[in-house]
Image 1 (cartoon, helix red, strand yellow):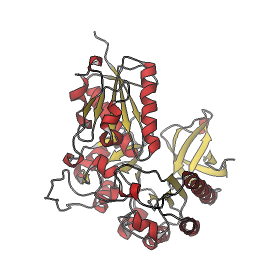
Image 2 (cartoon, helix red, strand yellow):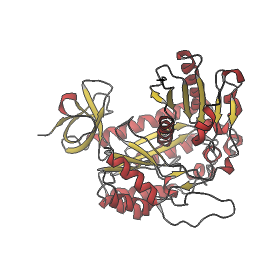
Image 3 (cartoon, rainbow, N blue to C red):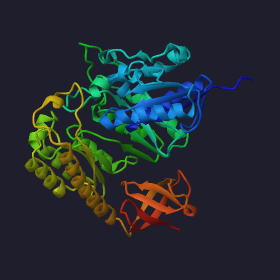
Image 4 (tube, rainbow, N blue to C red):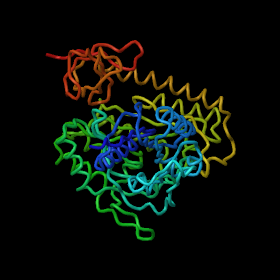
Length: 445
């Protein structure tokens, strides 16, 4: 009996990428490949890339080198956003054999079996992103306690700093019926928490295909999807990964507040607390709308966790502008920040805007907001010390502990002997860890 070929995967970037990597792995398994860890020798290495920042580009090159050090004669396949944006640049990386764009990603097996090391430079299969018009369902399974379920892809927004529409194409979605079927399939396999993912998740509902000049009328909205999931899927927990403030309606917030399955946790990108920057970023809201969304969440769910994305050092951001953002965030009742240092991305309007902020100053502003985030997270966690909450337990970097998150996204750790991975358990929150990044807890009797 022939030894099966092995394949290993490495994912860079967002939850959406993790769901798609799992879908690719299942395609290989169906063809008889044996998946192995990326740290092991493999016949084929597949790298699913991100290209939100320059750092992601550099990380891709580093991962290619790591794969080839483990197995110099292995085939290396690179796909994902970076592959769509800069296919030839990746093909020129020594050792890369195949580069697949957004439209070719899920036909990976059509190309892999024809690869040969004799071809020299990497083969590129990356069509025009405007031709990417179909939705491919994907979900992660088996590699994490929770599953990321992709229900939407692409984006029609034109934010001046962002390359994602160039990398993933127009907004398109799964159908409600298929998303519910995939979620139920995950529930039947023992998944306890599903995280809904997409590029612009709140824009769900454009159907499965995008036809130029024939934009379909939405047959269902995001609120229809979450109602159907709440009603039909037998899974204890569902989370919304990230949703634009202009798409996070009071109807959605009120529904989550009374839902049986949706967790009281929202991640809502802000990007700037200054209306001048929001205008230059071509965001579809101003800060007053964002503040109103936070107030609505707090009114319906005082215990909810609210996360926030912020970009510092955007072109034209003066010190006064940054301080305005800092003060706005300081007063805003959010629980934590994800802070990004602006980096110029080719072929975006922001890359040629005047008023570039020196990199040293961008980093200083980043550190200031990270400090604010730490204070906010500590304050949020401290409110729940002395209470009992439900935690979905998972592995911890220290084998003496199990980790996990409460329903409202407080990171918890308990002694390993007090629970089991993938169990939902009531715990008593005792005290913050010294670094403030989690809360120590004990199992309740």
